[in-house]
Length: 264
Image (cartoon, rainbow, N blue to C red; front, top):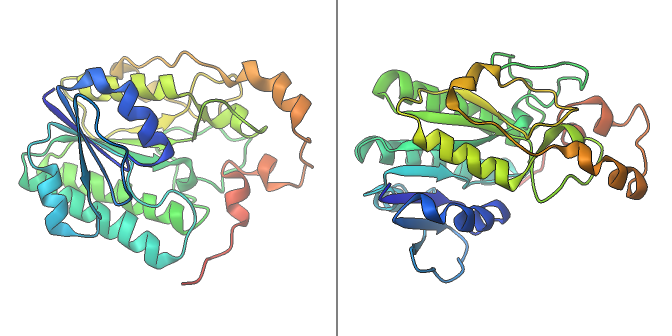
């Protein structure tokens, strides 16, 4: 493609993906409300607050695809979530509608279903059970994306990311881990297929202890290669085993179910 937009590019995951996805487009447009590292050879950097509709419109102009990692990624006061994950996402979809509907990969979260027990295997149609305001905001985001698909034909991959990091660091992540390489190959698959629609995709590697079923998107051609199981012995040696009543081993959302509602 000619130009790929990555929002949230100053974040941990954005910094990794800007490097891994460099071959995917002639130009990578990087955006965040926080300062960005200087642009590389095939990069351009634009500082942008997603709550600024006019700025988001200009940001999306000329882009062929959008990897949307921007917004709030943890439990925070509602005012912050409102600007970043609700108003900001609405602005992004309106900008996409006005600029030719570039395909979007929306970084949703497993916290849309965080109150499901860990002994339950989920497909894409499991009802929402969010574990906090952050999770609720991502439920909104998925619904917004679906409406824009049904009403305007805006294609979006709704990727419910588990734990995307270099390696799993606790027992829960043996089920939720998504390696950086597997996420990058998923992104490539999402932007490669001729027709996408608006599918839910579980963002997890090929973990033996996984809870989520991606059989419904086998047509995507994405086959995760990594498996958190290779880290089990390391986790057991370095991490105290949680008690059976601990949320970390009871709920799919882990400790997020215990987070308070943060006040402004």
